[in-house]
Length: 512
Ligand SMILES: Cc1cc2nc3c(=O)[nH]c(=O)nc-3n(C[C@H](O)[C@H](O)[C@H](O)COP(=O)(O)OP(=O)(O)OC[C@H]3O[C@@H](n4cnc5c(N)ncnc54)[C@H](O)[C@@H]3O)c2cc1C
Ligand code: SF4
Image 1 (cartoon, helix red, strand yellow):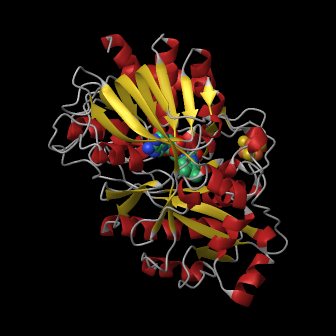
Image 2: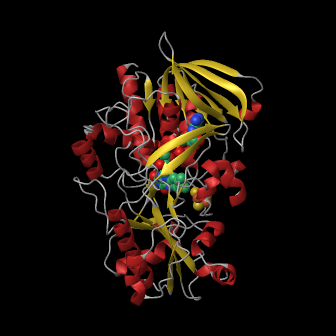
Image 3: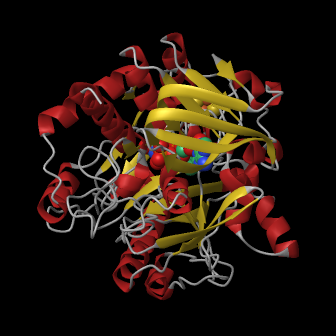
């Protein structure tokens, strides 16, 4: 059964064996595995229920419908826009569908430095099940649009390694709207596979319901409470509570720790809300001559990457940088082209000839979170200062992206900053070394917030153990992007789902 909040007319009080809070990459996979094994399972999701038929392809309607804070959740200083989905299926509904496993050196780093003695065979089996459920396949050469092809042509001509992503699409017509929801149900997010199959197996899903607090019960198990909320403003409509033997928090890296904090369940866990990685990305636009029609807003948004400068090592787990073209809607392209007034208008007139890429630079887990709770739920304060070493890699990366664009014939390269003069040819490349990384003048985005409930063996430095169970609170688990000890250093859907599949199977194997 799927119950949407608007259909609920009276307070809800449920009992179940397992309550899953959040229906995104982590929650959907756990709910499916438990429900198909016959465990009575309830899933609650703060966001609304949307399928292809509800996706209008309009930024002004879909950003508020599908994203946390309508896609405007900024770090405290405004430097990074931290994007997260908030709907049935979570961020898998609005992501770019790139399917990338956690790199082996990152697992090795986690083993060496964070005590994550994970069995590679078990991880491989979980990942294989995830790939099969999502229908992961290569993006075909004819599906690569010009926005994605041009800088890769440049990179290859410079002798650099490039590749084409795997993805979880089937029947894609290349409309280009992935990041505001696929109207054709071609992008196979969790709302189209794990969740409906969990429901078929007997799970009950409530959308438009926010859990705010969890209290252990004296006889065992927990009472989770919150509200059915008004879709949009997220204000409370009706009380909602669930008695459960087990709770799986999968509310994402910003909100799972908020619920633990509000419930006072992690008082003795100093790592709660700390060690946050944002893996910030710098949007870089490029203008090509009038003879080159890029039409960046059509086609699969992100299909290629240049990995020549990846530097994952077992010692550091992260490093280097990667650049990945990204086609976005006209509104987002416009905001990244920069300029004001007449200058901006002149740029917009050249939109057909504009390309865009993201420079992805894995970071050290240097952020931390705090929350206030109000009528509309939790508001997070995300404190994040990039390290100087990261800033240096970003500037190095900017020089590389610009070089690839110039090699491909671009006449101007514009990183997302309101004060940085465009690079107008290779003679300007050295200026990338002085690119300002400051709030107010630079726009960074993060689609990969991680950390905050770090996995580890020592409660003094981590929040969950290797089974995903919160230290000292049997029966309470966190299964989402918050458990990564450091950045997975790649796109995070497959890493989260792989961990979630493993976590659920371990719960089942232990019979808890
Ligand atoms: C724009 C964008 C593009 C991306 N592109 C890619 C990509 O191409 N490839 C890739 O691998 N990864 C991508 N990612 C990242 C990936 O989708 C996420 O890392 C992953 O989905 C995170 O999984 P999660 O379970 O931690 O959280 P989510 O999938 O975000 O799910 C968390 C859910 O919990 C709900 N929730 C929060 N608080 C509560 C509460 N109190 N009560 C009830 N429910 C609650 C939220 O509404 C949300 O739906 C992208 C992300 C974004 C935002
Ligand atoms: S590009 Fe493909 S997957 Fe993305 S919204 Fe269009 S049809 Fe859907």
